[in-house]
Length: 304
Image (cartoon, rainbow, N blue to C red; front, top):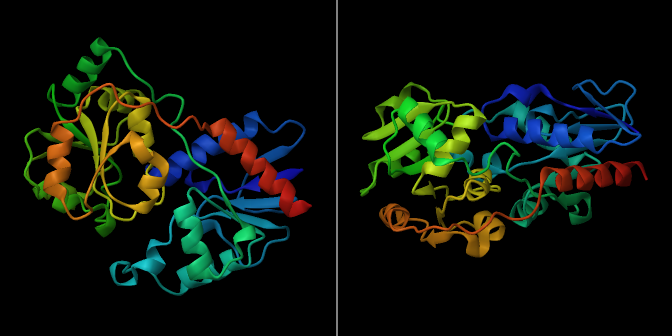
């Protein structure tokens, strides 16, 4: 089997880039006699996989599989200023796809309800922490924290800060009362530098990110509509407690591995972060190798 895998997002600094890099590497490691080619032009491939909405095409010369990470643009139209004809065409392409991959049952239900796709054409394949994200030794953590101007005791938030995302509620989180400093990690636009009283590190390499996860008192997640919550799994892989606002997908992924507060209680979220204790529960056992094997089974099913 020859699979064309759209790898254009491999350098993306957001979660989609993490997904593409980790899954593509694991697919290559588990390919066996199959072949996977990084391209968005299916050509003579047997299956085309678009791991993001932007790669979905209405017409492809072979069956198309699409990974859909969330349906925020459809669920919260008033907040998505850039949504237009192009997005509508891409959602039409997804409706015509041979199969859709999602990371949680929560998103699977959204895809069925909002795009009217048969649940049998939707497969849930969980995500995982990258192998490089694991507990780091104290000396290494101290060195990285000093390099980025991070104090000894802090709360951590990780994600993209290039543009405001209403569902992540970053501005509200920054304004919430807190006992510990709040460190925000991620590529940041000009607006993020106006957030009050937070420490911005910008984008950091995975080795530094693992140290910042390891050294944090807790990871705080204020999203009220997560698709999976990969940063929470990454934090647990680095031994760091997670506190999060209630959302169906996070509850599905983390269950009793995190402390949850009411979705509208950001002050409570910060307070829970300050009182979080170690050891943190271990992350879910699912790995990117497991995800790759499940993805190969999807490819086989669309050909069969």
